[in-house]
Image (cartoon, rainbow, N blue to C red; front, side):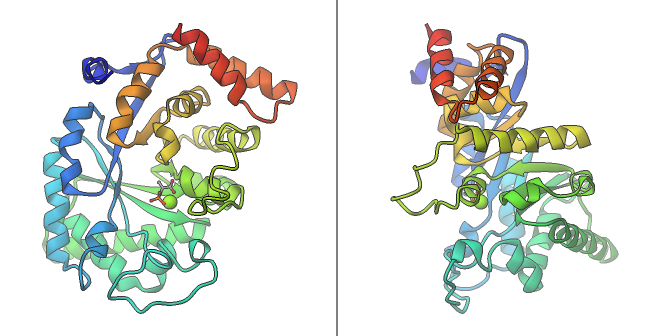
Length: 325
Ligand code: PEP
Ligand code: MG
């Protein structure tokens, strides 16, 4: 199988109907970068920046971070890298941060909420990203945005840091793309102006599913209880894709489900054109997409929903079995 996937490395994820899906990889370490060439990923769709903060005994220095981010961009050889700002707090406690006890850490003071309240760390991280990307394009996305105002504030903070860097005479990125991670159901229902204010939206399916079903992703008793291919969850994904498309905003999916071939095929059939996954999943996902007709799969999904099916997995499995033979 590895051989088969190696042969696909340079081929596009183009389905039989002619639709192409761009497959990106998720990363979080310098050591992940060689997989960019090895997997044939189009770029890094999600670079998680927590590790550099979690493995230190103090807040990393701006210069250290800038050096690391520049290294990542250099080793991407011109392929795009989307940096997700610090998603920390609550359960992922920094060793040097005062521990606060929260009854529901996943719904507590985390990610962008910390960034907007304790502005120093996020400002420093944004400065490091701007310096690292000087003379290049920079893509940044903010995690765990629950309402339009949080995104507006985060975006404004980034604009301020750009101005500050320029005023200090530093070179700034040639192009800036700013995205929101859609990880809470509330954001799917935001006003149209929110979608228009994003350069892109990335669906964080791990958190989105946990909050949609109120099922803790860390709790073994409930984490596999609800199917990603259930009709309600796919209706939500469909709505997000349709709203982004209507407002002309590119939308991607970067949760773990994007790396599962059947789920990836369904997301593509619902209109997602960019998926980001662990590097080892790119081969299997590409291999399946190249063997199926996405519009035929879409028709199956629509018929099943119209029929009142509560879960689309049986129909999807049957469709894919036919396509595989
Ligand atoms: C997600 O929630 O789907 C996501 C990509 O972010 P993380 O897994 O880091 O919370
Ligand atoms: Mg998340």
